Length: 223
Image (tube, one colour):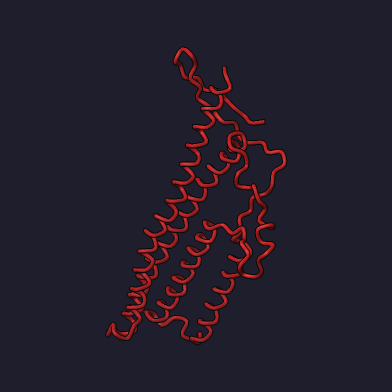
């Protein structure tokens, strides 16, 4: 079997992997817009339910906020799971890309070190290895926390619970929760992709068409 017959299936496999990875990344943003629509609607409904223009008694406003906050927590939790599913498939395709890419086009994404690019930059202008998908996951979790606080507040309005807790304490707790999420995003939102000196990629099955026109599956493991 000639080198060309072995190279062409690898190149086709690389194209499929790149297209699938690009498609999965596009889906992250499309799904994000879908869920953000429901999240924005829930926040708007929550603001309207506690506003002075509602002209409803405090207990009824609390009951309305109770329903809205439950809806918001459910939507944000579904968004969180959707992001985790997208990241799973993105990392799956990236693992296959790491195995096959050096054999076809070389390591084109590691041609220059980030440290060299950042040498002339200072402070907030430096680039950082932050994962956009991880940041989106953290934001979805933070949205859940926001709706959780609204849920607790709705219990206070509807059923007069937590009346012994002053309002300023609730605001401080929400501020501390937001600060904690900010720190977690700062220190845990980076892309952790360890350097591998001797990678052991998973085997790749290549479909090779022989001279007789028959397709044969050839297990392939890069050296």
